[in-house]
Length: 169
Image (tube, one colour):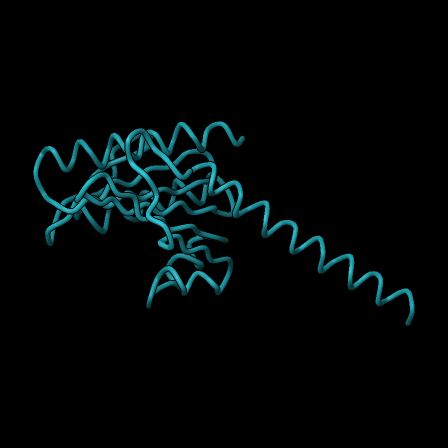
């Protein structure tokens, strides 16, 4: 019995360390500053496993079934403009690519392009969302607006997140 307590304590410490490391990796993908944009104080939410419900208020099971193990959502501001970023860690790069293809089908009402594709943007209901994958990271950027400028802003922002995620391999 004495040997069991230290083993349980070691496992709990290892799990806590993995959780902290995962959060820190996601903060490297979505750091406090991205170009002239700054993360809004108090507007960062992190969830792991079923804790992802804190990010997705309803429907989070779609994400966990697709392979999302943890996620970080941040709001960025530049003057009176805002961008919402969510970085997801997936179980694998294959799960990330599969989820991107699922999102494409849902948003574009069509099959995804043949071959490898890494990102796309879709507009509707007053916003534009860019979706991308980099390794085992699934990334989303929401810009409020449906113009070509909003689309370019969302895609430009998500490309920076992709570059940040590529450094974590």
